[in-house]
Length: 369
Image (tube, rainbow, N blue to C red; front, side, top):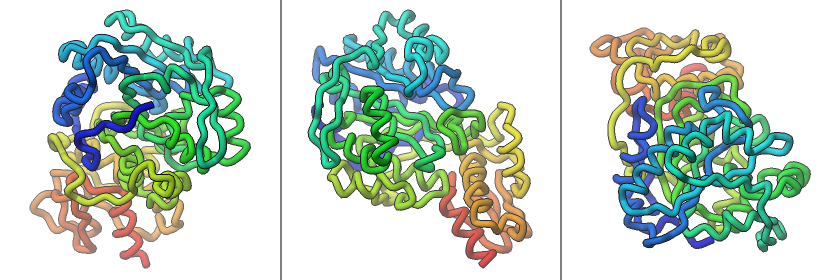
């Protein structure tokens, strides 16, 4: 597999909204993706279809994102497109393609779908020994990785790097869990590197890769460096990158860099006010009890929910002050912690629009001692 998306390696583009197809097009246009694809190249789209469940549950890539990408590619003269994936051990990729809406997308745009479980594998040398990688993924001329921003029961988060597990055999997936996920995920990243990664952050699950507790954020990201992307996602989820074991290893292996500066993030627009529509789960509602939300945008609210999850893990949720969030608090000095540029809190403010969950956690830690 050839190297990464070549032209803007250090940037992460962020877009907010409720139209995933339009958001995907806007990201690709801003990053100049079409100009980086050689004429006639085979472009492979690798979604996250770990299980056969709709994207609304927070586990799988929204099919509208693939639709937007395909339309963008076809409109810019790139028509040799395919969708590739291998669902997790015990699930059927064909069933997942259908349940997640990918089969319908493929039929609509005349784009073939390939089950990587049925593909031949090639042994690739890595820092963790040889890993059998599916040939179709390796032979792609331009690989677009389409992970979901979500939690994981073993690695705490899963996004760009871990999504490439769908490009290995079932036997290797079992071995990864047996030998240690962190080292194996980092090593796999040296064998197959996407040219560009587009992160589905629309409603990723709070803490479980199978979904069930989606957090509506209405956000998508694009970047070339999967390590930097995952590090940024950690901050949105209230995690330090060092807490996700495969990230320091991937950096050590030369896959990318964890360091992020403010100038690295390019916001193409700002989140719209008002928490997004959608029925929150009981767990999300419970975590939101300390939040005084008034016209909060979905991305800001989602980051605050992830922060409350970390605060709960710290064991200080009972003693923490109220968190004020949303445009409804503008111009007021609220008796608690203010979030973002909208709410000024007497006990402190967390900068950003939207602020990172990790910064919210640090603000609570400072107040609660």
